Length: 357
Image (cartoon, rainbow, N blue to C red; front, side):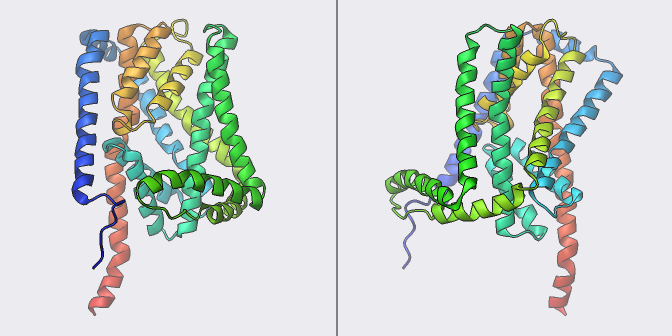
């Protein structure tokens, strides 16, 4: 008789953890939206600021938001050769909606991405490499943006010199990450050593959980190196460019929202807005709420007000930004999921008919 693996959580435990995540997320969102933000600003003033926006301002904001959603497709098309624009659009919008809806939604969104890519006929090695490469480049840019923004703040004298040590710490972290990645690609021997070192670190928590088997990461690192070199050799510059465009497109939505609600450059410069945007995105990487709901709003509003923005205008801009980048993808993702399911049904129907016959 097979005994359950003590390291694998039971279904009831998984459900309890999920319920706890949902309750925690709801509590955080409730506290931020109904307690903290109303204390910062008068809701009536925020609403008046929003109503003062012209139709032209709203249309241009929507156009930039649509472009931002389209920019998500670019790194996918580079990192997964053979992926069509339609396939990338269906997958990207659906996984984005899932990530915005569920606690720890980014992990679930990866599963959605895997399911879509598999349905398109891509194999496990191609999908794994694509997800790893996109994840690495995204993290590199997320780490680099605060460093660049803080450096620009110090150089422009819009911030005190005490931010320089923070920027230096960021530079050190980014340099270590980039160096480790470059070394892992430089030779098979280095890739095997790095894989072995990571496996050694991974053994410690596995032993606590009662699983002493050493993960086969040295061999996996060697295989990953060979595949990554083949993919990145002719494409690394395109992957870097498209990832930068995707991140900066998201920032452009925030910057345009600030300007359209009346926050002038003399109040909050684009450099200060970039610094707030980049630092808050790092904080929101901790999956407390779906898509950083509440955390991003409070963080951005606080940082931009401290930079000199009017409270009502800043909160209005942040809310517009979140509606266009957090809420808008959800219904779009519902439509793209329906289109994908319908296409899947059409592909399966002939097979079912032959089996019935």
